[in-house]
Image (tube, rainbow, N blue to C red; front, side, top):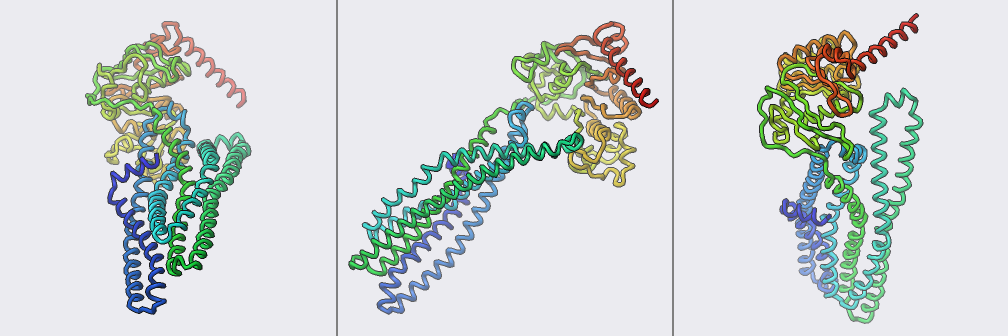
Length: 584
């Protein structure tokens, strides 16, 4: 996999590789020529005391040294650009893939695990590629070229070096499987650690409120201790993969000095040749050590490639884009014979037929798990039905371009999450080109303008991470303003007023009722009091439509809606009595 990646970048960025190769190969050539110059420096210049030869050798080395610096800088720039481009490409590819993910995708790959692939696996791949390109290829060429030169100087000594080089392979053969296991274990533990940290940040108030800090601290410490133990063993294995080949090179160096010294004493090679041979062997030895040094990077990248490919090969559940532009919605939204389930064989909606007018206020009510929010997921095309179709004005939304669909929809989710930035920025997310007057009109409709005006910085008030400096009701109203500023043809509300006080909720619902004269408002709620003013109420039970009608007609039907209404009213009365008893 590593060499496929390198080959693909060689095709797409040949000039970068040419710069890296030029710098690396010329540096190698300079080292070998410098080492080989000892033969001529001693035998042809110093011993004969020939100044002219000495001048030529020194001048040549100075010129080559200057050229080596220039080409080296070129190679360094090319390596920097290649490394940065590789990191950019992998991060972007992974982000684009996981951005397509549905809820099922994120159930398989928790956030902490995905973060580990960004912070650990992609850098591992980057390091392996760059070490191979900058050190591996040059070192391999250096060994081949150096052995050829050594063979030309003294073939008997070189044969001994080649035979002894087998020792360099032994550490890799012995430690490879252990290194791979430890790399995998460390990456998995890092994913759990990231998940625990993410959980502590997001659930800080819950952890503090339930005094869970000690247990959460223990959970994080357990992960850190496991990472520490695995990390020590992994680092030690990697150190052995580097150090043991150095021992082999040292043994070969002893062979060169011993056998080479013997040949020199026997006058079978000159002193200059022996010194040159030893200098070149040192360069070859350094190159062999360089090859051994990249082995830990290669083994780490094997694990990282596998983990990254695991995510990239996983179906994110993304829905293919249609090509048809959706015309402005004017008639109705329809679910025709829809069956859908998040888990195969466990349908949430069962053969549902449902029509929602393009104008008016429709409330969808039912118990938890009855399929209310799932209908919104299907209308947004976040999910697709297993059976049946979702139609806007008779057009199957699977055939429509996703952007043309979502441009006509505004949505307020139950969580009401906000982005880092100002309140103005958060509202304008719904319509980036909106002017200040449009922002304020949307805020007024959502019942939040006066609150924002009361802040010291007004609409320039910074929203902390996920709206941590705002109350639940304030976040909900800003999220509603974000949806209203789009003036969407379809406004989808998922428990959108659950965090509001009674007075504010009444004002917001009046604004929603007014908006329903111009577009379709579809509100999901489990509290029937929130649905009373709807033009049409759809009652769900076990994934099917149990009843439809206005509040008055459903109360007269004496069906499920009436039973739940009376139950919730009784619960409300009991709650009031309890509060009065406490206050008394």
